[in-house]
Length: 357
Image (cartoon, rainbow, N blue to C red; front, top):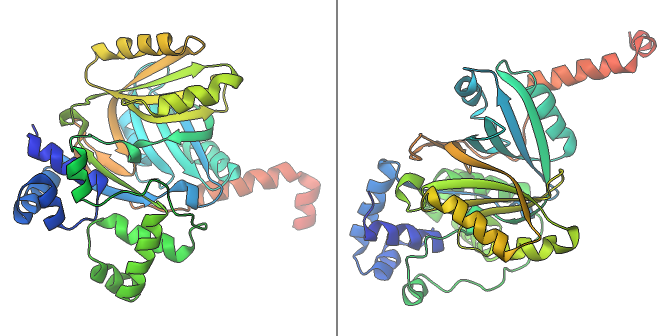
């Protein structure tokens, strides 16, 4: 179990992930050595970790998809093992209800998504069926969630957060390369990043300052959910009148329990993932939603049994960190590409193939 100092430390790193240990210690009323030693203990035990990824809003047009997977009996964990390192898969959840797995995936285009679902997932032994919905809008996601253990005075010691991000252009390849290096260790020094990137320390510092000011980097300091105080994860699908959806998602996104809120392309237009303190809170939360949003109908729900992959981090059944899957903004599966090429060739018809031959 974590003690109060552990919770405070995690919260401090959620607010200021790259702050030096002296500043972190000052916010917690401990010395820098104690803060650093505590963090090392937490990370080595897998009970807490830091990660980062580019903010999707700055990469350009991206497709966020939620893919439900039905597995052949006895094949679920084999399927998970085979897709665990696929770069497009942000989350992999073993869930209850009308699906075995719930995948959150990010793609450059609808064509890339179609190739992944049709040829990558469709070609795996052990997958019986898939159903895909697109996020037409992503209103909030987990990098914004906080434990909120620090009072305002302590947070101010870490540095005042900007109320509004500084506008930034779409990330270029150099920015993405730097974020990829940073994701391997969010607290590595500017000097180390400069050495690994081939850039000067001044250039690295200036670029990080620009990206941080624009909130172009999404940092995540997480605790294993089993010891976080929020051990239950539930995903709800709902339907609401189109005219009311914007108001409902805005309020849902601001609720303490909400980790993710999205508008969907499918028959049910809203999806929300919440973290709760107990199983009994699931029905209490849903009842509170009914009172607050009588026009919202919850049509399906799923509980997460094992979050195998969470924001690119591989976790054990207790939610402890095992390893990181390196971020990549591109996905290239040669087997899927070959299968797609063969299908297109057959679709062209025998006359066209004869002309090409």
